[in-house]
Amino acid sequence: MERKNRIFLRKLLILLISTVWLVSCMTSNKLDTEQKSIRDYYADKNYQETIRLSLEYLKQNPDDAFVNHILGRVLSDSLRGDEAVAYLEKAIKLDNEKSYISSWSYLYLGSYYSEADRARALQMYDKVIELNKTSNSVNWAKIEKLQLAQNKADFTFIGTEHINFYFDDIQSIGNPAAYTEVREAAFVKICSTLKVEPDFNIDFYVWHDRNKFYEEYGKTLGFSISSRGIIHSADNQSAGHEIAHSIIYHLYKNGGEATGLINEGGAVYFDQNTGFSFEERVKKVSKNARRNLDIKDMWANWGGYTENVGYPVGGAFIDYLVKKEGFDKLILLLGDQSYENALDIYGNNLELYIADFENWVDSI
Image (cartoon, rainbow, N blue to C red; front, side, top):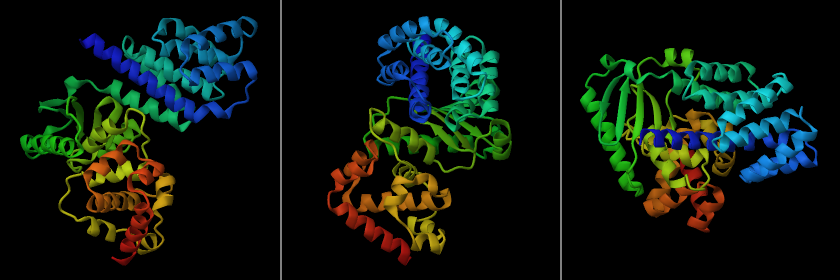
């Protein structure tokens, strides 16, 4: 069973890395017709044809870095990692660490070595970070490096029905039993509200020192690797935010679109922080930001807004929609968070709701 789980997680990791790479890199390089055909078959996940065409192409063009890279990737995606290594290494040599080809090849090599040669895998991920060719490859390398660096024996473990807690400094938790019980209760409550069957568990890492964590791993706490059921949280974070991300993922994981406004708004809505109303949270947003609030722009350009603006506004917007139309429609929205799907769900009322919500934010 453990081996089956490892194989499943490896397949999932490869699929995720592959999808991110296709989005971020495919359109950036100039390709001839044959290379484009190989790339397109790979994008369509037609692995058999990708392998066939790549091998044929490399007979005439053995020193093509791009196709060596693609062939290495598709062999890895097909769980033929032993065959993939030579092509990935050759792609790096031909590319001479000049472009994304090298960084993503190192990332795939790290994935290959992660189970059998942890030290070598860490070296591969360090190379991705050092090259710094694309933000997506660097972020993935940091996440994978972080997971490899964790030795669960170094943590204090407490298990609940749905959450495996790992504390780096359990002495920082005043009442560990209460801490874990509150988060287990949050998990059950959010699943029940969103009608998600809780047949999965979460590995929940709890860290005491935010600054130390950032210095060591280059990432800011907290965050959820929802597709893999992993949370890294500061010990003083709200009980439900990252848990909500992991549960919401089960609504959109089968093809729905995730957007920052709805995804983060949903996590804020379910964060279980009852000490502040959504109105009080929005009041902390600067008057200028509230006066110029544009929900449709925030929906499309989430990255252009700071957390201090986006999170409270997003949470309040979810609260507004729930009060207007209830949880059943929210569940549909969380399953596909695009504006187009929201129009299908809320119809002509959506634009009226947005205008009303923006006026409310400006008025408080």
